[in-house]
Amino acid sequence: MRLRSTVFDIALAAALWAVTCLPPLSLEFGPLAVVDSAPSAWAMFALSSALVLPLAWRRSHPTVSGGIVVGLHVLQLALGVSIAPANISALFTAYALAAYGPRWAGRAALVIGLAGSALAPIRYGFASPIDFAVFMLLLAVSVLASWLLGKLVRSRREIWRQMSERAERLEREREQERSLAAADERTRIAREMHDIVAHSLSVIVAQADGGSYAASRSPEQAREALRTIARTGRDSLAEMRRLLGVLRDGGPATAGPTPSLADIDALIGDVRRSGVEIEVLRVGALADLALPQGAELAVYRVVQEALTNVMKHAGPGVRAVVRLERDDAGLLVAVLDDGRGAAADPASRGSGQGVRGMAERVGLYGGTLVAQPRIGGGFEVRAHFPQG
Image (cartoon, rainbow, N blue to C red; front, side, top):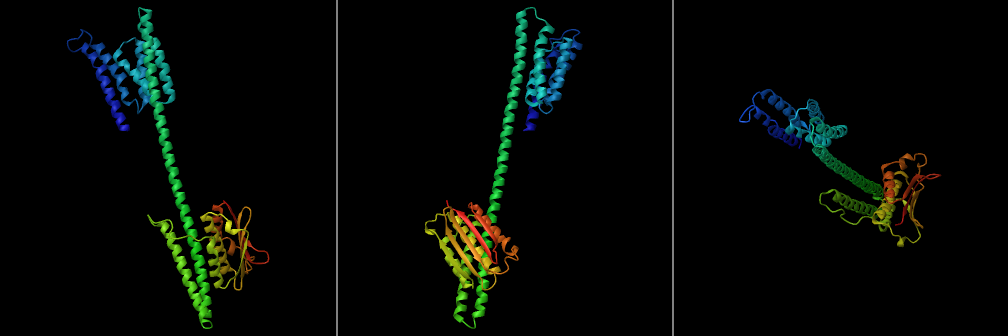
């Protein structure tokens, strides 16, 4: 675009030079030659060229171009030399300074142009006051029209520039939003995978330990442990496939139903078979509770992660309580245990990826979560999910 504008300005200056500067030479050459006119003809040719040729860089260097043209017009006015064809460069200069020059240069061009419109008729003289007024008005209107046209072009260019900047800014914001959305999705998937893998492996390890201990004494109990391991592995594999389907190009968002409140009993059953004694308390009208599907999944994951921590950290012979309570504001979920070591080492139970994941899940649905050691030993996780 800049190269095209430069070529256009050079062509314009060349065309104006050919139209306004070559005719004065006819006073020396050709059938219109005038005796002893050579010095004045060459002087007019040089001055006309100096007035017109600077228009070639009226956009690239508007202040320099305008300064040359304005200075030569002032010199012409002072000398009283009349070179009317080349004086049209004043209108192009007023336009260029208003459109492309600094704002101070544009204002100066208007003031100088209007002043020149008033002084030129006085300098060259007119016999009739009417001719004087008409000529002055014609010059002033021409200068003002050229200047206003330049201001219009400048305003349009500013509007286009602002629109372009706004479009670029919106595109950057959309790109940032896409990046943030992708990061959130990766975090969500990582959280899901952590919950699935951590719980599954905890159940499998606990069942494998119990099965190997019971293999010689109670073959049936050992077989039940193996069946629990197989079922846990299959369920975990199905959930992993569902998550990987989200990442696959063109794949479905889900490959099966997501866990919900109805699946908590099966979850508790698996943990019980791992040797953890669990008491389940349900308070209030849970059947009438209306939670979004995502919130139900979050409830399931909170219970799952809390029970996984019980299996991993609470020690043998632990007892746990899972409490689901419907209140006026929503659903309260609590998982408490009487395990060992929690009060002495809260960091091992309360600051890991799992607890952060639970807090993020609950926060997504406007809820709150507390995970802390219990007075007298053990650990508790309490989460509240608002209804609606």
